[in-house]
Length: 585
Image (cartoon, rainbow, N blue to C red; front, side):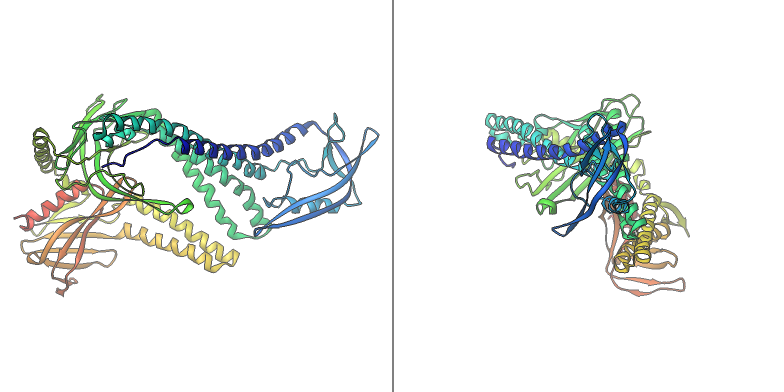
């Protein structure tokens, strides 16, 4: 059952004013950034005038472990026959530690102290206004601009959330009052059997996140060169990783915009609605435009979503408890695609009564199309109850249809295995280098981490800190070699299963059929909503050896294959192996 929702106007108002405080604070700091930029632009036509430096000093401030600097000075100048005095050094006010601006300025002014005149700038319309250094501090400007973007953006988001959240709660309360027995339907996406997925929300999140990240990272580009070239602080090179990540986020944001413009909003019209254990999750995927492809991948997952911690230590973890998938054929110019999944009788129920420990069912659809790939996901309700006779019959027909389809289409080939024949017996090879993309990613990041670690140790002398980075890099490089060189081959004989696996130096094992306890699926790594699978052979005994013969071996859990992207294909390969070994009887 879903937790009953209530409407409280007080929290909404409190959140609104809380967000308003953040918004106003961010805008107030942003005024200083605008004033700095305005001063630099407005002084473009100021006159250059010789100035006499009377005094100068570099003030050092210590606060909460941070050291900031401020250059102060007194100077005199003559303009149109009249003498003036001023103390404005630059258009940035206050103390800071962004770059080496204050140290450099102080050193420059000291050389002109009671000596050669310093060339400053005077406002011809108001000669009492002047400045010594007209240089625009872009690093300081970017840093100051973070406050209106971050605080103002967070404040505006809180205000918008409180406003629209209050309206959503009112709609949910109305549903609960009108139909108490259907309070599960109070969730916003379950008002009807038409479940919508919009890439627009993801697009805005990607854009905002990329902008904020790059604004935060921008000052690093101004700070790092000075730290490395002027101060020899080579560990500061680590800071360049943040702008590099920012480039990746920009690419992600651009792809999200292209995806929204190409696919827009999609919907899954669920029938029957809702689903019950022992029944089916079935419906029609409705698209705004046809997909330029021949097939679409659809996955139904049962997920446990656990949130722990609070504040900056808050984290969310999703664990896949169950998953099924199928390939949906796509016909030219077709915008509606029907598919369904069979639910077990013991299927878990949707439950969000505890916001920190939820159980949900989600459909993920994806397709490889030219340009930007299609993807959409829908959370579907699985509620306590008994499916009607028509639904039960449809579920049985769906199971039979999918079983026949898997056998007719040789779904096991989608695992990427290379089938062959050795001595008249079927053999299966998972060749080395099957996942070149994963190997390439590990290699690139491994080289980056290793190079940064060696650089920190060699140039900065921080061997412990650099060694940690280098160790992570070496582990990634080892992973790259594993994906490039490791292979597994097994031969199905009438009385045993022979397995040969390894990287450069491979080992052979033989497992008698009578010792095989099971061949099962095991969930492995996950990338986004894509779950990868392994095929595990459990034995009570076995034999191992090289090419000269075998010797007795202990019971083992043997990985026959890993990183299989399709659960359906992996299960089809298991069924095929069992039939050939006679284990399906």
